[in-house]
Amino acid sequence: MGGNSSKSPPVTPAPSPELKCPWRSVNWSTKQEILKHLNVLKPSVEPLRILLYGPAGAGKSCFINSVQRALLGCNASSSLESSAGAGESSTLSIKSYKLKKRGGGHYPFVFSDIIVLDPSKGGIHTEDIIKVLEGRILEGYKFDAASPITEDDPKYNHCPNLCDKVHCLVYVLPSDSTAPNVIEKIRKIQEKASKSIPKVIVLTKVDKVSEMVNRDLRKVYHSKKIEEKVEDCSDKLTILSDNIHPVKNYHAEVNEDANVDVLILMALRNIVKLANNYAK
Image (cartoon, rainbow, N blue to C red; front, side, top):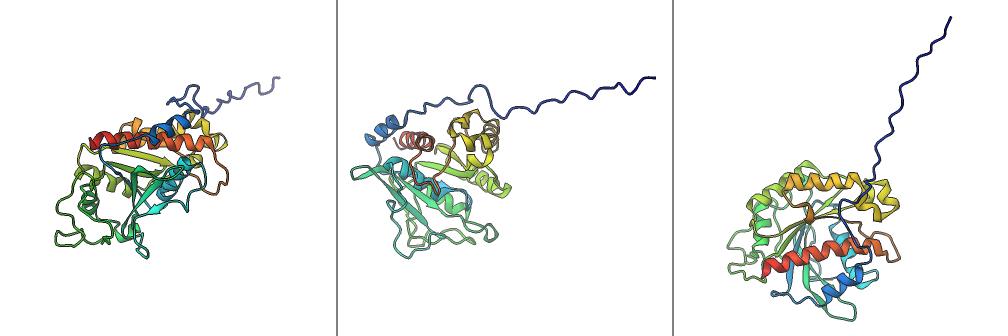
């Protein structure tokens, strides 16, 4: 009389979240090389204008602060210089930031930040985004979600020159979640924007997507999850994966982190290169 001799099926191990080979090569000791390149940059148009666009909470302001911190080598939130006047509402207008060099002076590029309104209020009108790209909206203009700028507005620039135009459009998107309505609005911008203007995606919060990356930022290009996020953004927004940069912004960190700096500076180098090529 035999007992039940059936065996349980073997347990299939869960697939590893880590790739054996990185999906993008990176030199983690390249920080000084990038800084040297940026310090001697002399673009044909100055300043190069880089427009950041993305949903509220994506980390646009943190990215700007992180770039300045990586460039200066210290906490830089108080070092950013905004061209917007005192008392202006940052939720309704463009703010442009000059980036300081170590030892004095500024880099020949600026970041312009458009703070997206509450989605329930419709956000900034798509036509206004296109006009910003064309250099037709002067700083200080207060956006109206209901209607775009008109040509009789005193802040409408009828004759923009190359210096007024945006030379690179950067979408700042959180890698942990991006609402479908945000993707749809970006698609509308893509349809109406000049095909020639370079477009880059900065994927923030990579440490929130992958616990492996949270423990060791150098694993960012070994992460299957982050690779999938990059491929998904590339497919949905028709942007080459080479122009999509996963980063971790500085938040409450007190000390400098060379790995954070390298990812930030790699993204910045590509953005500035594309902007400079476009402005030539």
